[in-house]
Image (cartoon, rainbow, N blue to C red; front, side, top):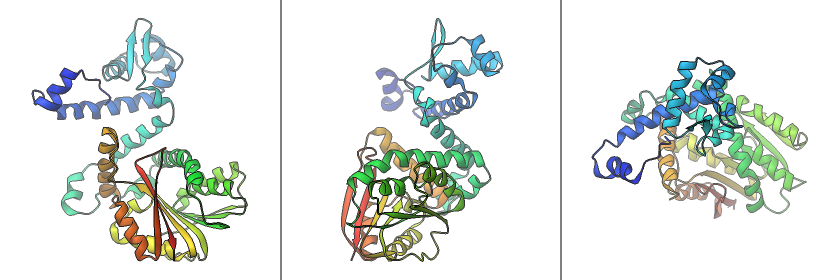
Length: 343
């Protein structure tokens, strides 16, 4: 939203029914669009060094003074800004918009505005109501935001995963499916000087990986290949295969088939690593709300879903991988990493 409610206000909307609780969602939707407009205008960056008044902000942003006044009032009313004698200032709520979450907010605002129309039809029919990747392909800015979101998440998780989830002793061949940004492959190669990685993804997904591999000095050890991971996987005798945040993009039949194909790329004793959001993770109130909404977006825009740890473990067993181990990541407790060994 983020609208701060007093305990009495919260009770009226959320407990007693004296006021309509859904009205808070209307406010939240409107404030998300207002905050996104502020990000695009450069408003929050303009306030990064301290308060500024309306004339100064309007001149610096090249914005109409009256239009900006109305936007500032909306952002102050919803907790993104404060109105002080010296002008408008950032709050603790708005400071994350100066970093990576500004990109995240814009991405989700664009997805919801562009793809969530007709949501009821995908629920009624059981079929996806939009084509997420085709839609992004015609919107380079949105695609770039999505790739950055994936990179930021992977950059945050890769170091922990490489440290706590070991590969088999003597591992020299790693296959990374759908990990075009290459962050996980780079992290494992950095820890193991004898390891070589092959990353397979769509061409658009590999753009970020090229610069990351070059920056890490891994051009001779991380190979980026454009390919369809749903087709035949001609790779064999791999020591490890990664399927990170991948299965959720597909329906059950395709997801299980992809996992079986991935397992066939392993040598006996090789390991399959499956990372995804755990639909059953309790988390805090925000996590408990985001997870099912994220799954609703998967269903509507990709025909995908989140799979329980029990389902993933069963698929691994059916693919010939046993001795499953589960790792909960401290940096993202809502994600679960399952590792199993090919018999």
